[in-house]
Length: 161
Image (cartoon, rainbow, N blue to C red; front, top):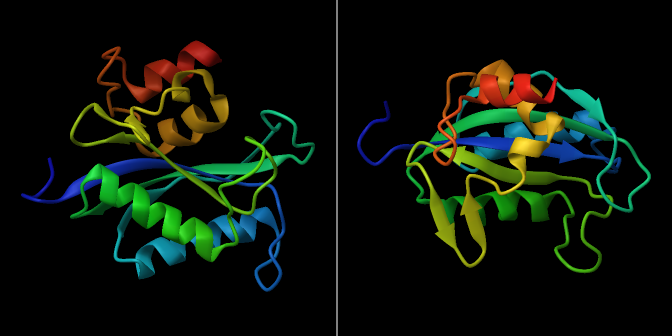
């Protein structure tokens, strides 16, 4: 359970580009966790990192992981906070979809169930199909439930195995 006014989010992290001054995609993800904490998020859990093939036109392999973060922000505000962190790592949201990027932070699930707005859907619409999201998520949040299917993250990950 969460404290009153405190929300928990399961986020997916990904990177497939080096960042000058930080280094490899793995180092970028580790720095992103620190940046989230600096942004005011309480970091409850972080998965191990895994390599994955790119989705879409990018040719570079990704480093992916997941984190459970907590804070007082509602989903729309949480999205804005995550996008601020992405911008701090050089992320630009224009041009071709699924291209290489220094940092990608996606809200997968949150403690409040389903949420839909014009620029955000929780649960993430594609997370059930993505091993690079479900495997790290199952490591740190195996009992979180998908509010649409009722399945746990562990069950969803097992279906992809």
